[in-house]
Image 1 (cartoon, each protein chain N blue to C red):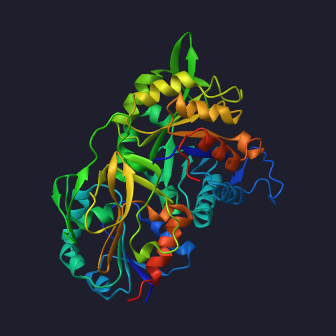
Image 2 (image 1 turned 90 degrees about the vertical axis):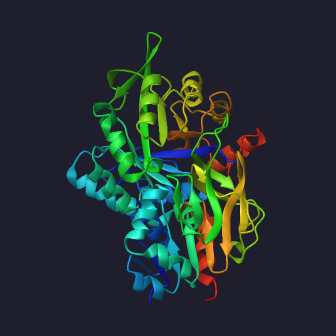
Image 3 (image 1 turned 120 degrees about the vertical axis):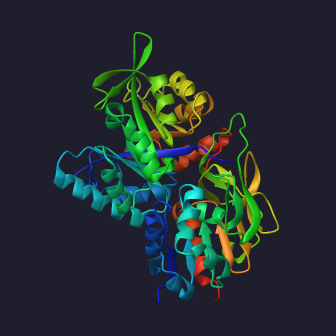
Length: 251
Length: 198
């Protein structure tokens, strides 16, 4: 049976993880490769690296990091942040990334999605959508959720699929950081109307939240960062819990 | 001579396959030269992308004629597996016919997204390439077309219907999933492939 996926997200800058972690067995808390290896060993189904480096030098470091990660783990991983051209994607895939994710650059120039999926195949193109509910309407935001656009989230999700996105990474800015649970209503709306997988993100605070987002929210994958980094929810425990709830998991 | 020759053709990103071989310490060569491929010790035929474009690329340097005649251990993955079959509904193209079965499109079914994306289990193993793999192990899939069950099926998966996760005929092995990113299971399959006696 196709399983639901559990995906830890790592923010990286200049090749190192930015947010602190709580792994006592980690020699260097900022070592993204070591952290990736631990997550892969613990049963993460996939990893997402979000690069927040702004400098050219930092991008080179990112490519080195991607290459080290690829040589260390044997599960799929996706890299996002600062990608706006075919050559950006080519460099990341050459370094060993399995998928890339784009966000603001896709909003700015939606043709980019079509160009990338034609060049590299839909399977490696993830479109990240940051969304916030404003007066009852779900509005796409860019630049880390700071800038509202004139796009309605439900319509944008249809468009990115139509243009060849392979997956949607849906982050609710209303829920992100609250630990009060995923945005079940919106995740369900987007996932039920999509022909491609939806990765739910933002708001995970306990194991029940994952159960809800898979059952009520119809998500194909659940993403979280801090609850994994600070070991509030160990991945093996989460997967055992979800299996007991009859949610298909790769064990 | 490197342990593995990876067939290079216009079929998307093969970097993940190269790195997977590096992880297990296997030497490889990437080649589209018919002579090199004929002399290779073992061959991996990867592929992501679209079947008809990939076939056109193979025809360009005559690899479509050479591949079916090869006698070395040969492993096709994902689209590489589909191209080894008789035809594909993707682009309605005739393929290499090593396995005389047609590749079909998953039927549209409520509750199932197409392509299938993610980890699914394999079962009913019947090949040495699956030695030491635990029953119902999970592998990573991304595909909208499938090989129906046939006499060549050596592992199955269930998505919408039961289909061939792996095929084998003589020296030709093939897997629909992405062995290169299928965790320890995928790595063991590559190791088993490297251990198949020539």
